[in-house]
Image 1: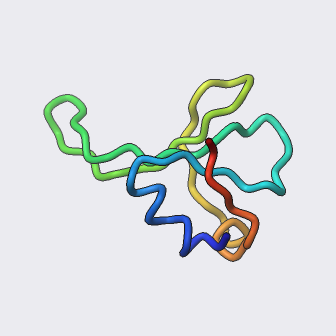
Image 2: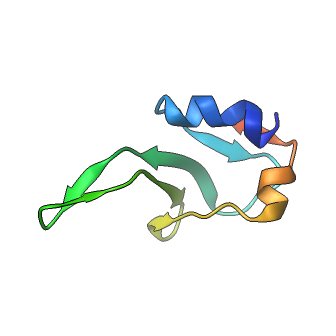
Length: 73
């Protein structure tokens, strides 16, 4: 699936992954609008890995152009 096709699923709270990664990456999620110290945060992406917990995720050009995105069940 393309990034454009999978983005609505990500916005709906579903977990996604690229089949081509094959490393410790488990899934990507989108955190909706939230607050931090009373200030509003805009939505952002997190990636869950097997060894480091959660980290911020910014898709690269390769990620955006990839066609191996899939939903995590």
